[in-house]
Length: 196
Image (cartoon, rainbow, N blue to C red; front, side, top):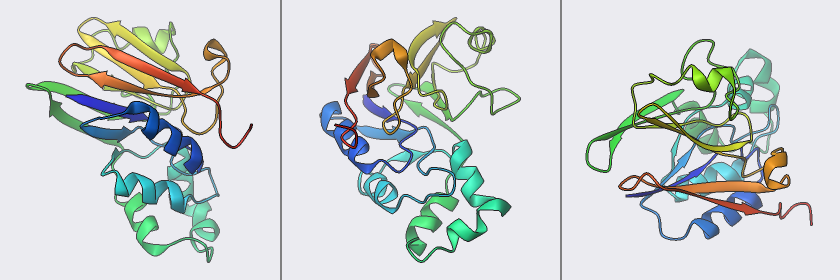
């Protein structure tokens, strides 16, 4: 099974389009959160994720917009009701069996408390995941790409498909494809179409 993975699109639908094109034939698209950008709503991103039958989780920016401080942003005339409902219906964590009974968990930040921690490559937060009970753990939040094996768990962060911050790939946008049979992760790095 081939899973396309994106995260942190932050309203950048052109970056998401590029990611989907680069991933080629995939069996399912996963999005590890932050579809919106705090108080800026992303109709086009949510529509493209819906059209792609993507499995999504909420990120910290999504939660800000959906929280008490996001009322004015949610009530803006540009926000489409069906897209807001789609965002509101997403969970914080997804747990599914993929590719022959392997367990995949997807969340935006750390899967252990406090959940909003940033899990960077080589960090102590990453080392804390050594005994995590999953074959694949998909994270976002940092905008830094990573595929690190911690014990029996492969921790994957696709980087950001919307706002490049990862100096290790030259501050390019990125996404990845996970082959659940082999455990191979292929990253795709590409320039932001909004910043030529």
